[in-house]
Length: 235
Image (cartoon, rainbow, N blue to C red; front, top):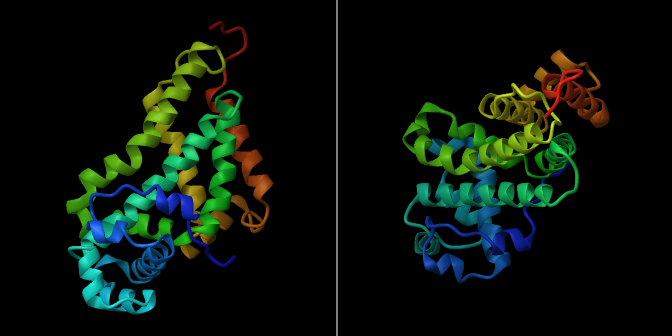
């Protein structure tokens, strides 16, 4: 599937301290062109090898204008990551509004990942770049920004589910949230990385990438059995 880019309202709602005011004053269309060009360059070459001159050329702006919008290549990279965070926050907020228990909401997240990972593969590729030692100086701040909101979301769901007797009383919300997010992360990587696509087929079968429902049902069966209240257990 050809990659797309976040809808205009997502870009319009972006709040970032890493770009200059001039960038925020651009039209949505102009901002989208710059961010899309940056996403393509960073995902293809990684942060170190990415060239801001190439990004400017692809976006149809001068290199002087680029430095009027961003202090540095790092500022552009961090703005792109802020957009990714905003996209994740939007997905979580939408899922939180859904009716249903922890399992239904987690299933909604898995289905959203199947869609968004295919639409925006560059974001997942850039996310993987963040785990490299070359960007370790950014890890403390970015990990809290990107992972903090999802960790809080999972822990809240788990605590409510435990209180309502939907899951076992001895489920620890910290460990469980870590495991649930790892399942989701591996799934999204599989739809945006050739290596992880092959990895999924090795573990889940050659049809795993094409059979979305098989993956959803398999993961949900595993999660329900891992977290579900044991027979006779009371809230």
